[in-house]
Length: 293
Image (cartoon, one colour):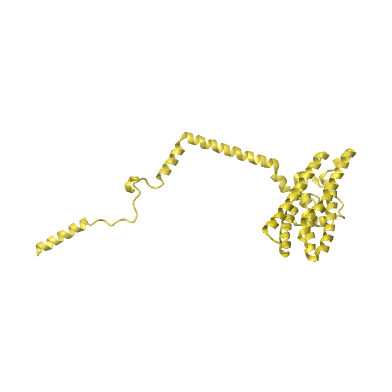
């Protein structure tokens, strides 16, 4: 009995020593590649090795430095060309407005006949921003008026059961293309008339974009009072815009120095101003008559 008891105890101890360890839930990868089955490297190790080898290669460093210099040089060239055609500082000038200026400017566009002084004010040979000078052109009102016109056109087409994204997109693109064509025509006319002034593309874009205010008033009046109200509003806003364009271009855009030139040049400047003003009612009618029925 003692023998069997001892044998049993010895056997249990032997079995306890021979029992395998329970498998671990995760493999130990701290030892490098040997812990992976088949001796394969751990995932990502070859990528890290290649990156470190690439960074340590002198030729690779030279190539990366050269590529960075080319990218930096290209970025500087793009910025230079961008500022050559579109000056951010000049663009900020045309958006330097406040609430008082916008309200007064809208009133001037609708009823310009009582306004006396049309000259742009200067301070040390620099024109005052629009918020300090009512006669200074701006791009805020034309931009907001264009957006409002597109939304109003969508509403008018929806009321008439003719709304579709294609038709609305056609209205917006047509209105934008007409303004661009008008600005290009004015630039060509100024070049041919050899007008010497500080007139820029932004100035022409601002003066051409003021027609959207009259377009909005005409469409709203037409939706409220029918075609009769539309034509009355069209006549009023067109005449007011023509008067505004003539007075503004002859003083602010063309400049006072050009008024004392030769008689043929003065006639060309006068024809250019009158042509730009006479073109406004035609564009307003063409872009709004289909919205009122």
